[in-house]
Image 1 (tube, rainbow, N blue to C red):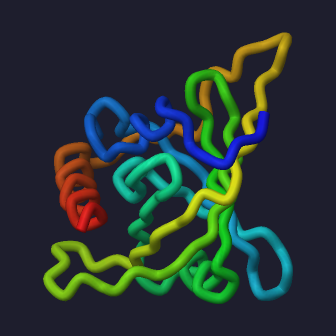
Image 2: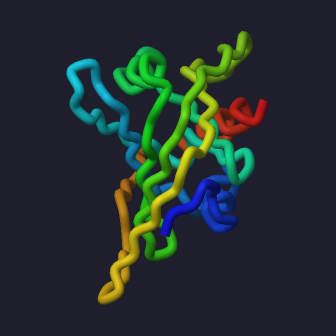
Length: 153
């Protein structure tokens, strides 16, 4: 299945709400390095928000290889497992201006959804993607909530 928009379930999952319930969920953000190789980065639900079915925003640690790649190419692919589906979301990226009074300074990006490909196995359910355990849930989720609030601006 191919689409040009995020479906309502994915928009809800990436809404920035109920972070405590989603704290173990992670995705991959793929960019292209200068030497032509894919570069993989992990991204949590506290670093991404779906503004609407056509637009995502990201908050990445400053100066990362992923940020440099997105600044150079203007493209990325988000890979996620959600609701027994493997999703590949192609993104056209543009940098957002820094927030002068950011609680957690980040490289901020807005991404236009260029296409969504969904994989499902007819003979099996995809049960999980990348998951992790936070070392300090209270501090991490608090930081995520502040980061998501800043992405809404």
